[in-house]
Amino acid sequence: MASGEIFTDSYVIQRCPKTGVTLQLVNPLTGDLIYPTNRSLDGVNEYAFKGLLVPFLDKFIPLHPDCLLADIGGGEYSRCAVELSKRYPDIQAIINIDLIARPLKGVQKAIALAEDLTRLEMFLPHESIDFAYSSYLLPMLPRYTGNNIQIVILSALAGCMNSGGMALIHESPGYFRREYAQQLLSRGGFNRMYAYGVGDEFLVLSKFEDPTKTSVLESIGLDPIITL
Image (cartoon, rainbow, N blue to C red; front, side):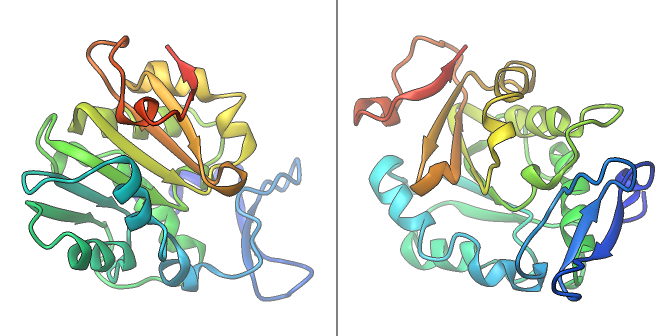
């Protein structure tokens, strides 16, 4: 599958008419934007999660040496992996999953990484991941596709996570939390969703065999948005 193929039926890449520089995805029939942004994706690795992931883990999810973390779509030079390896030098491993062999420019980079998310089982053993995080990927995908790519991605992620494992999704737009949350969670294999951060910029998805089990997030008073 060529990079960006999932968008060829409905979406095209164009330059923002206001800036003339920023790349965005647009549906030419409806005018819907998939990723309107005030900067190109060249700088995403520089800003995504910078200074935010470690404080989150310190507060909510204490890591131990046997933890296995997945950095999904972090790019060839993941700021997250570097930050985590310095803060938690004794954990088992940080797996940086990335389809690309070299940095790509513009929106095509994120599309290539999103494709990679549907095949996580190729890289991660079943039920092996304790914590996974991803930034600027899932929310960028179109809501309406033939096989609902968002559910495919969440299902692949859930299958690789331990019971009780958690996934942190960065930059989640309103529709992801409201219109599709229940469908995505139930069909994807997760049973709880939490909002965290200013403006609910983060979603925390948790997976439990026993849906009545109390999570570390609830034990400190963070209420789930949805419990299935």
